[in-house]
Structures are given as C-alpha cells and as structure tokens.
Length: 254
Image 1 (cartoon, rainbow, N blue to C red):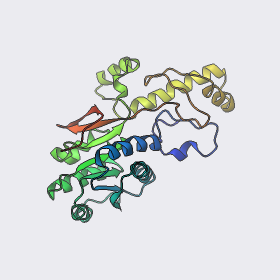
Image 2: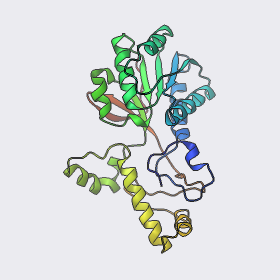
Image 3: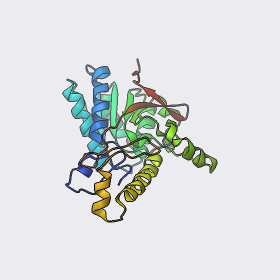
Image 4: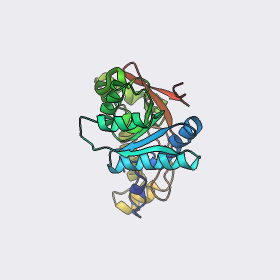
C-alpha cells in the first residue's frame, strides 16, 4: 500500500494486492487542466517537465485536460533534472511571451526555475502539482516563490480525525506536511485489514481491503477493484510569505 505513488499505472498492472491512500495524477491533472481552461484558455500557456515518470505523467495529463477543454499550449518543453542553470529554458519562455507555466516535477528544479524566471523579469503565473507541498521550496526560491500555485488534496492536517496525531508530531518538533499522514493512514488501514482478515495471508488481507470502509487520520477510505481510492479531492494552494496556504478555487494573476 503506497501513500504517495500517484502515477495511474501503479494500480493498472493487474495486481490484486496493490493499493494507495493518495489520489492519481489523472485526477489531479483533470482538476488542474480544467482550471487552466477556465482561466487561461485564450492565453499563452507553456507546459514543461523534467522527464521523470512522475513529472512527465502529471504534465502530460494536465496538458491533455487543458486541450480537451479547448486550450492550446504555446510551448511544450523538457528540462534536465539536477541542473543548476535553467536560463536557456527561461529564455524560451520569455520568447514565447507566456502568461503561465505549468510545470510537472519536483520542488528542487522548479525552485531554481522560478527564481531564474523572476531574475530575468518574467512574471508569468507558475503552477505545479503535489510535489510542491514542502517548506524546502521557499528555501530555494525566497521571495521569487510568491504567488506560485500548486494542487494537492485538502490539507489532511485540518481533518478532525488527524488532530491527535498532528498534535503529537508537532509536540516533537515535526510538522506532518505533505504525504506524512497518508503514510500513517496506510499503516492504520493495513492493521485494520489484518484484524478483519484474522490472518497475515496476503490473499485474505487483500480481500479484506476490498471489502469495506476503513477509518484513518485522513478520513474514511474505501478502495475500488484496482486498489485506488473511490474518492480523491484536489484543491489549490498558494505560496506566500514563506509558506503555503490553501486557497480553494484560486484566482490567477491579473
């Protein structure tokens, strides 16, 4: 059971004993792509990723949803992960006179890209996905990260089911951001399934996981025949003043 494997193919390989407590990139891409269609359909939107499986999948699925809604990308690019200088990529973005950049990838590369965009005077809206839900991002961008939007599930730390464990984490000096609580939930659900099955036999446990609802720190979960969650919601977060805040149906820059 994975707390953070978001690629759709993870549960589409025919394995009966594979599950995830997080949502899928096609669900996230549909949400972001529909928002881009609503706010940027007739504007210049660029899409990019760093060629890694997660990154490419998220960017491609978001672009597909954008195009399904009638949008058309002015630029689709890739970058190399782990580099320090993305000025050539930024120059391409400037030449295309983009209004927005959707980036599929991780906070390390996008942090540098965002900083170098602002240094070159490119103030286009930057958008990304769930890999941006880490405070490390701002340590790379500083004020250049202001206003960046990313998608993630509604903050699991705010759920009433999570309060006790969140308080315990914070009492030890750790903020359970990102997929921390999804990991905790995976263990909780597995334990419940083992008890329900009355066995550690893999077939009995997987049958138990498919058989009903389980309680967890991220709320009640049920799984479909593939092992995916039957429900998965997304919302927008904005980086501002050194942290990220949930903003719901965010508004683009004017």
